[in-house]
Length: 399
Image (cartoon, rainbow, N blue to C red; front, side, top):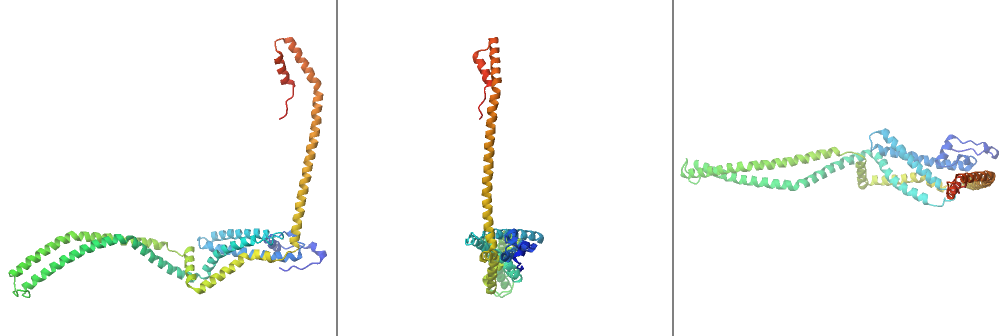
């Protein structure tokens, strides 16, 4: 990077390398003016190096960002190069605006600062995604499990009212059946005890009391079977509806789980959770953001901090020369055009006068000939003759 300081007599023979020309181009310096500015050669090479670093970093960062969005690395590289070129263009335009005449104006630095904050904060996220890839994937797994639970709760809340109605109907039917079955079971047990001598009459066999209990048991059993025939289809219908709802919930849950991924937004959310819950990650996150802001601001900061040199003086003087030359050339061209127009006016005036002088005799002869014809014909009126004269011989004014 260091250039040898040549003797004064040898400076005219200095030829910059292609690398230096490239760095000067990044720093928006003119090689023709830079050739004689020994001190400013390195200054603008340094500015060019900072622009190169920002450009390279932006290209890599945007490439990685697009790699998290698209599956094709070639497409991600093209998009990264494009966005890196946009950052390079912005840097060069802002650096070009910081000249000797407006170097104390902080508008370019302020604008670049706002842009750097936005880009830096955004680009810190892909960088952290790359640095904490394993931890983020663990957090993504935890977040996806939480999303499954949240989805399940939302589905349950959607079908809650419908399920409650079906469950209440089913429970009512089942309670009624259970109550009837308990009555039948009690009557059956009473009948059995009466027949085996353990009942209230203590008589074995089918006696009067046992027969009465048998009739009561049979009647209750018949009523129970009738009620069972009525309620079981309704219970089965409620169970079927509940099963359909559960199947629908499971199906929606399965579809939702297929949508879960580890894409950019998902990983950003996991990163936010890590930053929120992990102090070590939070510290490195903000530290990296600060570093990225410095990287984004470095070209403008470098151009602002470097002192004015001979190159800036040459640029100012060269610009003044070009302005004066432009104004002088404009005045000269205007004078030439005025001279041309004046000379053309004089020449055309003489030509027109000569034309009328030379055509005067012929116009008189033609007038006399038409008067002679008018006299001989004696059919055309004087007004008609005058109209012909005007049409054939008088001049027309220029518009």
